[in-house]
Length: 255
Ligand code: URA
Image (cartoon, rainbow, N blue to C red; front, side, top):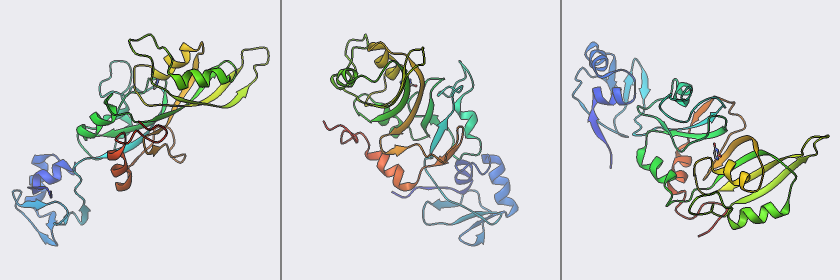
C-alpha cells in the first residue's frame, strides 16, 4: 500500500533535514511538489506518485534503507560502542534513521555485513527458525583433511545442547608450513549464527581460525569492488531476493 505522509515528515524521514529545519525550508519556498513550490509542511505526499524536489534535487521516498557494508576488522557490529568503534561510524552519508547491523561479525572478522533499518527483515534473517546460508573464508591451522569435511557435514559438537547444523566445508588451498604448522584456506557455509560459530566449529576439530571473512549471506555476495570500510545500497532486486531468503532453505541446503 502506498504510504501517505506530511511533507515535513517526508523530508525528515529521508534525512534531508530535521523536522524543524524541514518546515523552515518548506516555508522559504525551497521545496517543490510536482513542479510547484509548496509552502505547506502539512501537505500530504503519496509515496511513488508525488515528486518532491529540494533546491531542484529530487528526493525519492524509501521506507527502509538497505546497505551492504564491507566490514573491516577492528569495528564492532553493534550500534553500541562497548568494545570498540561501531560499524555505524562507517555509514556516514547513508540515508535512513536507525540503521543497525543484521547479525554479528566478531570484531576481528571482516566481510559482508547487511545494514538496514527494516527491523522485520533483520529479525527474520537472524532468527534461528530461518536458516540463511552464510559463507566464510577462513585461514585455519592444520592440513586439508577429508575427515573434517565429513565431520562438518554431520554437524560438529560445539559444546552446546545441540551440535552445529550440517555445514559445507571445502579446502581451497593448503600452504605447507616450512618448519611451522601447515595452514589452509577454507570455505565454509553454515546455516546458523551462533556465537563464534565458525571459530567454535573449527576448534571442535582441533583447529584455530587465524583469519575470517564473510563472503556471502543468502543471495548476497561481497562485491570484490567494495573495499574494506566501503558500503553501497542494495539494488531493489537484491532486497526482494533477501526477503525470500531462508524460506526455501537457502542455496546449498534443502530442508
Ligand atoms: N563465526 C565466528 O566465529 N565469527 C564471526 O564473526 C562469524 C561467524
